[in-house]
Length: 342
Image (tube, rainbow, N blue to C red):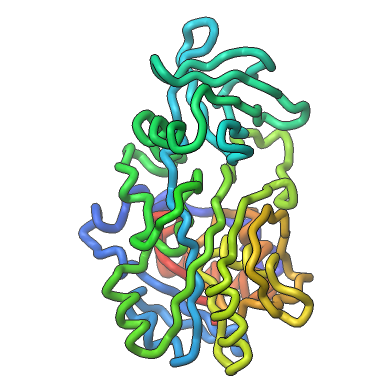
């Protein structure tokens, strides 16, 4: 990886976090943390439980309280074959966009998940591997069946089907994400209490993550096509605006929180309570209006999340950060280590 090409690097297989830290004998808040100062480029190697030492009274952490769904479901197709169906994003109480892994479903076909849950393919849109499914149940009834039948979406670097609890943050409350909002995974209740005791604010919003990998490299998937549902409560908008007005720093826990807050902010950086869908794509040319800092994991080569990081660091400094993370053996992905940008 060169400074001019921070998005293209080789990630050794040994740096893929294939299991939760708890299964490696490490508390969730004791994963490693690489802290970076935006203004100077200074980097500090530490542990996540040391986070309070990097923050000041009056700062505000904003966390995504979306809860991870077991969004990978096994279905029987019309010809009797078993297929994996990955939910991609909720459309209505009954309808979801989904990926039928390795297959091309056609409109009108039926998928059977259990004796009391089926789904009809409403649409197989051209140019995308996603289909729109209409389930035989809706709302809470559908969610109950998804929780009973499904498993967490698992990518190739995770070599064991870990239980759903490992894919949740401790504060998650609103079911809806098909992939874990993983930047908040390292928080424990003890750490949140220590932060509050120091005078650091905690606020919550929801952004339900969609399916990020469509398993189809033949068609580039532009981030602007990746619509995600979000909700910024009035209390959170007020907390952000108070923090900014008093000179504190607003620190987003995850790229999902950055997208939600920046979508809800006006040109002056004032955040309004709102709900909706965001397609906001943030890159190095974007001027951050509401967010001052970021807690995130380490992202794959050429991932769109790296575009977003250049709005905080710029490509040269981002390249330096990722070179250091590679050299020092930080772990990648949802069960990996953390990156604090202030």
